[in-house]
Length: 76
Image 1 (cartoon, rainbow, N blue to C red):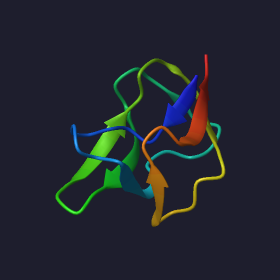
Image 2 (cartoon, one colour; image 1 turned 60 degrees about the vertical axis):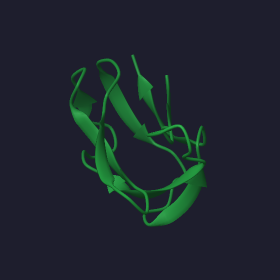
Image 3 (cartoon, rainbow, N blue to C red; image 1 turned 45 degrees about the horizontal axis):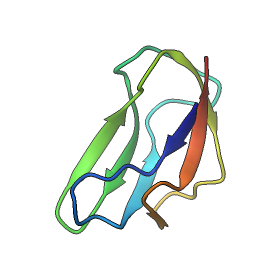
Image 4 (cartoon, rainbow, N blue to C red; image 1 turned 90 degrees about the vertical axis):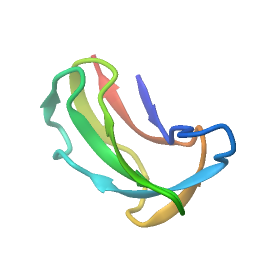
């Protein structure tokens, strides 16, 4: 399952990837916080949508990405 830049509100078109909260290759539970995203208004920790093993993608910390950009993946 791809982990993507989320759309936090109806007007959001991009966000800053602030970093992973768990190591690459870690087993995570559904609901466990995976990564942080920031906008000009808020910083949010994004939870895992399901249990799996986190695999980092090519996302670079503190870079801005469009909504829907793949940041990593969860292997289920």
